Length: 235
Image 1: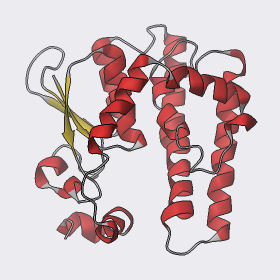
Image 2: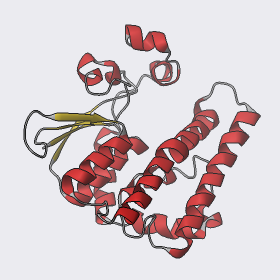
Image 3: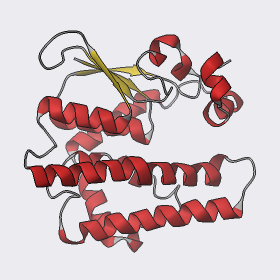
């Protein structure tokens, strides 16, 4: 059984998509990041960066004590290796999957996240910052579109290389992107969107849509953290 510490963000969706694809039993433990659940001591023990998602594998391969994993890319890689699913065994294909896994973690996710922040949440609209991150997000869409020009999925067959990027592309409208400008990416996106596992994964989020939220507290928790936050915990 996998305990999944989860909230309804792109990084949270990555893990439910994988778990639904593979049928690995899991239990969702909601971490309401808008209310500060990510600072609770029991969560910080398994996710010291106070970010979701994180997991505890209660039945690790080979037995022994449970294994906890934080960071969505590390979780996907861990689960793929545990199940021998959604990651190739051929060394060349495996390298391709890992390249695109790290590409998303180091590029698409951070850039799209900053795009979203400066467009939607920043108290001051800074044209330079908005243009910078909208344009960089578009460049990365172009990279993925080019990659998909001659293949169905990012690394050939459907894998964690696709799962890691899909939830970030799902927010394309909020990122000021038009999928019609990226026809190969759009075809890929629509194919993943209609997979039964993707539909089930996103349905999981519906249960948390009406959770209580203090808007001002949420803004402080999500966008006003510092080294002191980590030292003292959220107030």
